[in-house]
Amino acid sequence: MQQTNTVVETETQLPLGWRERLSPSKLKTIPGRYNLPRMFSHSSKQMRESGPNPARSISALQTSFKITDTFELLRTRKWSVFDVQHLGLAGFTIFSLWIIDPSAPIIKTLAALGYLSLLFMPITRQFFLPSWPIWTYLLYFFSSRFIPYDIRPDILVKVLPALEDILYGVSFSNVLSAWTHPVLDLFAWIPYGLGHFGLPAICSVIMFIFAAPGTLPMFAKSFGWMSVLGVSIQLFFPCTPPWYERLHGLEPAKYGMQGSPAGLARIDALFGIDMYTTSFTTAPVPFGAFPSLHAADAILEALFLTYCFPKLKGFCLFYVCWICWATMYLNHHYAVDLLGGGIIAYSIFAVVRKYWLPIQQPGKYRWEYEYVEVGATKKNKTLDEELGYGPVGVTKRSTELSDEFTVLDSFVHSGSSSGSSSPISSTRSDKSDRRRD
Image 1 (spheres, rainbow, N blue to C red):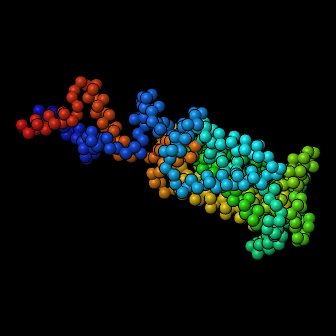
Image 2 (cartoon, rainbow, N blue to C red):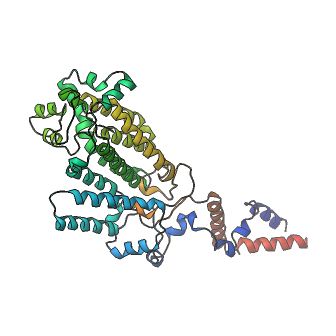
C-alpha cells in the first residue's frame, strides 16, 4: 500500500486543473486557432477534402483549376475595408485600358478577360492576385503617354533645383556628374540599368523560399502600390530632371519634348548597342523626376530583406547608397528626388509591417512553418485568403495547451503499453486506498 501512495505522489506533479481542462466537455470547446500540428498530421483523406476550409499546411500552394472554388470563396468571404484596394486596382486598370490609343475594344476586352481568368483559377490566383498592383503599375505607366496634353498640369522647371539649394546648398547631381570615366559609368550602370529591373524578381524568389508564408504577397502589394503612387505624383507634379537643366537650363518645358538617357547614353556607346537611348528618349513620363522610383524600389527591397534576413543589413545599406549615387552620377535625379522616394518607401513598409507583415521565425524555410503571426504588435491574426495562400487561418498555438496534450499523450501511451488502466481511474483508486488507510 505504501508503494501505491508513492506512485500517486509522483504522478500528481502536473499543472493545476489538468483534469478539468482535459475533460470531454472542455476538449470540444478548444478554439480552432491553436492549430495543433499533431491533430492535422494524421487527418484522414475525407477530412482533408471535405468542407470549404480543409485543414492544410500554411505553406502549401493551390493546385486547383476550378473557378467554382473561387466563387465559393467569394461567397463565404468576410469582407473588410482593406478590400477597397481591389476597387482601386480595377479603376486604374480600366482607366489605363480606356486611354490607350488606338481604340481596340475587342483586344482590350480579351486582355481584361484573360487576366480575370488568371484571378479566378486558384492555381494562378495565388500569384496574380498579390501581384495585381505591379501589373497595374506597369499598364498605368506605359499608358500614361496617351493622356491629353491639354488636361495635364504645367511642368515645373525651377522647383527641384530650388529645393536642392534650400536643403543641401548644392546640387549633388551636377557635382557628381561633372567628371565621368568609363569605369565609373560601368559601376553606375550595374545598379541603375540592371539591378533596378532584375532585383525585384530576385528578392521575390528569395522571400518565397526562405521567408515566412505571406511575406512575398505583402512585398508584391507594397511594391505595386508604391509604384502606382509614385507615377501618380509624377503625373500631377511633373518636374524636370537634372539632365534637362544641363541641356536647356531653366527654360520652360513643354509636353511632347523628348526625354534623354543622360549618362546611360555612354553605356550604349561603350557597348555599341541601343539599350537605353531609344527607350529613355520616348519615355512615357520624361518629366517624372520626383519622386525617384529607382531609390524607392531599392529602399523598399532593402527594408523587406533586412526585416526577413537581418544579416543582410550591411549589403542592403551598401546597395541603397550605391544606386542613389548612380542616379545622381548619371544625371537622372536630384538628391531631393531620392529623399521623396525614400519617405514613400519607408512609410508604406512601416504600415505593412505593423498590420499585415508576417513575423519571421529565424532559421526556418518557408515549408518549415507550423504557424504564422501577423503584425508587429504580435497579436493573433489570420492570414487572409487574398494573400494568395488559400483558406488557411493560422495563428500561434498555446504553449500551455500544447504541453498538456503532451502530458496526456504520454499517459495514454504508457497506460496502453503496460496494460494498466487509465491514469484517471488509477488515481481514483489510489485516493480510495488512502481513505481506507
